[in-house]
Image (cartoon, rainbow, N blue to C red; front, side, top):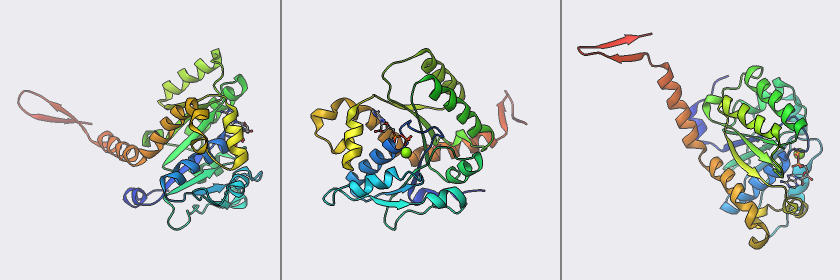
Length: 254
Ligand SMILES: Nc1ncnc2c1ncn2[C@@H]1O[C@H](COP(=O)(O)OP(=O)(O)O)[C@@H](O)[C@H]1O
Ligand SMILES: [Mg+2]
């Protein structure tokens, strides 16, 4: 399956949040990202692929005087359809909250046209073990190409840095997958979820410590076109034959 890079860069920014493990923060990231883009002025589309419906519940709780977020319940679609998901007309972001336990094939169909893919990982031993296995599957089985610079990790609930957390970081560095934010464990996320808002919509004095890391993640998302172009340029350069400059002539070597 191929993508038209120019058309993609003009269309909505597709952001997919995934990790087959439940409870690692997918819905927390999806709703906070939706809130961020809603505050920017254009209603984003938030697609809930989890039959649990937690993102949709968040949209339903959101009060009508908040900047709007369009919610789509797409549980069946994400399970059984290979057709691409679509944003509401006018939305500039399509944010997809995936459920736990998708097969590599389903993951492939939900991610192949994504501009940004975020994997939240909680630094507990069991979560790190399952994240390492999942990332290996993503690269090997789902044939995900990390060179297009769309994949990043968000470390979530980083209360303590364990030995296994350091091992995860080493593993990710070896795969050249960036860790773009480290989100602390904070009840602010629980309260925000209960009210249908993001932490950017809470009183600043309560969330000052949380906002810095969230903003690193939003900054990375905002650079999606630059990342895609960097990836395409790097791909073109890789395809060029090596050029060796000698004293008298240019020599092409393959
Ligand atoms: N950084 C955090 N600090 C405190 N609680 C969190 C944090 N991230 C997520 N949670 C809470 O953990 C629970 C699971 O998070 P959730 O985003 O629903 O995970 P997932 O969608 O991956 O199953 C929720 O109750 C959520 O409010
Ligand atoms: Mg969820």
